[in-house]
Each structure stands twice: as C-alpha cells, then as structure tokens.
Amino acid sequence: MKIFTTVIIWTALVTPLEAQWLQRRTPGIPRTADGKPNLTAPAPRTADGKPDVAGLWQMLSPDGAVGNVSLRKPGDLQSADIQPWVQALVQQRAENFGIDNPRYQCLPDGPNYSVGQGFKRILQTPAMIVILQEDLTYRQIHMDGRALETDPNPTWMGYSVGHWEGDTLVVESNGYNDRTWLLGGYPHTEGLRMTERFQRTDFGHLEIAVTFDDPKAYNKAWTFRLSARLAADTEMMESVCNERPDNGQQHWIGKTSDAQKSAVKVAAEVLAKYAGVYKGIYGRNPRTVEVTLSGGTLFISVNGGPKQPIVAQSETKFSGTGLSYQFIRDDHGIATHVLEGHISGDYKFERQN
Image (cartoon, rainbow, N blue to C red):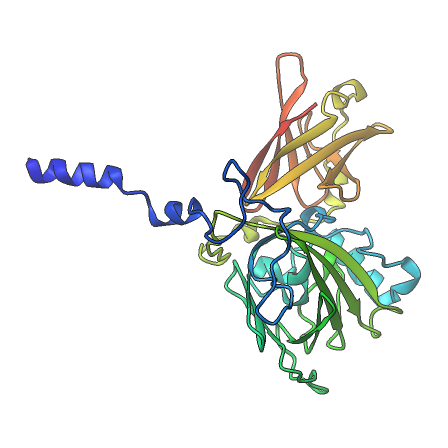
C-alpha cells in the first residue's frame, strides 16, 4: 500500500516533459521590470558585428487564402503579370478546394515555407544559417561566399546562399522542383528563383520581404511581405501531419460549384444575425473570421484575407470555400460562435461584436 501511495504522489508532482519545455523561461534575453520578455530592446549582434537573427520565431504572415486556395493575387502581383496557363490552373485548384495541394499530402512546402505561419528555429554561425521547422523539414543557407548552382538538381527545399547588405540578411534560393505551390494555389516552375530579405528591427521582431522570380510563369517578379515575433519562454514541438493513418482527406470531395446545387434560401433578416467578427485559435495560430452580409449573401474573410461568398446548406450551415461554417445561436437567433469545419475537425470561434 505504501509503495502504491508513493507512486501516486510522485506522478502528481511530475509535469509532463513537453509541458515543462513549453513553460520554460528563455535564458539570456532582456526583460522588463515585471519579468516579461522585452521585445523592443535593441537587436543583438554576433561577435563579428553582424545582426544576430538566431532564435525561435512565430511567423505572422497574413492568411490570404481560405482553405489555402484563393483567387486573390498574392503580394504585389498584378493580373497582367500572370501568364494564361497560371490563371487557368489557379481557377481549377480553387474549384477543387485545393485538394491536390502537396501540403495535404504531407509533402514539404518548398518555397512556400518562407511565407507560411507557425514556428521556425533559426541557428546562426558565420559560415551557415540553418532554419528548422515544426514539420521536421529544414533549410541550409550557406554564408561562405559560394554562388548558387547554375544547373541544380531540383529538390523540394531548394538551395540557398546568403550574404549581408548592411544590417539586412539577403538569401537567394533556386533549384526547386515544380511540385509545390506558392501562396493562394499559384504554381511555379523549376526556373523559380527566390530572394528573401530579413531585418531584425529590434530584439523581438523580424521584417521579411520575399520576392518570387519565375519568367516561365509570371511576366515580372513579385514580392510578399510578412513579419515574425520572437517566441520567448516556450519551445517548438514537432508537428507531423501524416502520423495519423486517417487524415480525413478521403472525405473531402466535390467542387465549389456543388454548393450552389444544394443551396437553400435563408431570409436576409436571419443572415444579418450572423454578421460579425469571430476569433479563436486554429492550430497554434490566432484566427479571425469576419462575416459580412451584402446583397443577400454572406461573405467570409479570414485573417484579413479576401471576402469569399458562402452558400447556405441549411439555416445555420454554409459552404463553398473548401471549408464549412456552422453558426451557433442564442435564444434570439443571434450567432454567438461559428464552427469552421476542416478535414482535421471543427474549430470553434467566439463572436466579438
């Protein structure tokens, strides 16, 4: 009996290792008087005087694509800059909810890793910078003065070299295979060349500009801007998408046009009670779903992305973007929450206004 009691007490006192790491204070960082990380302190520098970009970073890229496929042009890309075959392919991917996205098949993101959300661990030495990602992929950025390969063997993650221009880290990459997608379902060819510019503006913030140059798909280079915040007092844990034998993709069928075929009529006064801003967490990332009503149709915008119409399948459930939205109502018919349906499950977001 004493042995059994001791085991119970010991078990109660031990916090799971993962939880310990997620709550561990990051040593060696500046802090405010109340002990919180001082993210506005001056940016650190390495022994040779270069900006130190090492650390665990939370990427803060805007989500411009509901369901990861959007007809909105990413970055500063203009319609005239997109070749016809690219426009047709993006339309096709949007109609199919982006089901062929390599991400959904648990394949590497390729050049899209630069603009995705999630955590990234940057390790910095004078000769190499390494970026580790939650999905166990990685990048090697050679800082030893070598040039990019002129005829590289195409790979998922490409080849990267870097150099400093003042306090800006400039990274040039090529050698990607053409199986990955860029933002919003836009394709690229094996001729893609990518240039990234990293600036650590203070201790806790990175500003990043990513330029895509692919003459076989786009008539000029285009740039996407994003930022990152230092993730202090936590840790990056692995996130492996294919560890479950059933990822739900076999249930993801149909096309966006199918929603119109099964649409039902919902009164405008009912739809008006769903309009509002809903917030919650998707994965580890904050997510804002804005619902607006225009011309008798509800529109969804995720994290400031484009407004996309959704079609009523019942009085409370809507579809048409690749995701489903079901509104939870109070006794007066006012929506208090919305359930955003993914193949991985439903995510509940609370109404803010």
